[in-house]
Image (cartoon, rainbow, N blue to C red; front, side, top):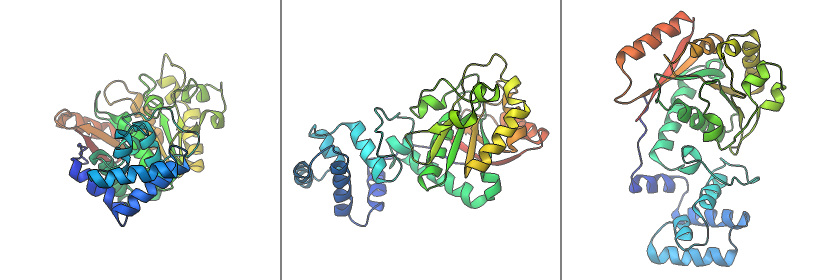
Length: 299
């Protein structure tokens, strides 16, 4: 199980320092990145560094406090520095729920990376190449886990596609800051080619296939041979394909996805998910001739 909690300032600072050999290297690289991105010039970077030394603060936070860059510009620069974001185009807004970008040194992001490590070392590459991600119940924040786990794999150079197969309440386009009209339902119905619907996000190496137009009967999409073939094609095009489903128990939609994906990562919510619910999920997974590859718990 992976619990996600807010990092303390001290913990966040230690995580920042661990990225670089020295605090000076960290400051220099962030300053250089901001200059490279055209957010400040070299003279301004030197002025920020001088103020940082006086106050003992962090370079980025000092620059924001001085009014020389915005918080979004700092998040963008950190994302570029860490190799998570494309340098162009620059996102106008970084969603707060996308913690791998908005709070890359937080406890939440660290725990997502820990889950990535457990999955990478604990299951086969074939199992990791395509799996469904399902919430144990409504409110389990499975969409949050799907977006951030996908971003964490993309950050280490894996080519990732995340698919929003929650056709009843799609969320991935919003959390990834990529509002889109076309997506999965349109591809399966034959209205748009698969390659046109899968497109890049602000995160390097991460593509999104959004839910698409509302479907009155999601199971008429998810239970088709076209959907199954789409997943197999995506598996061949990407290193990792993550398919977000409806929460378990909301409808049988998720079981159609499980039947095609064959592997499932279950997301539960601390002090909310019941043991009985998890037992029913386990039985349902077995009924679809699939297997659970792990579980994560969100606080």
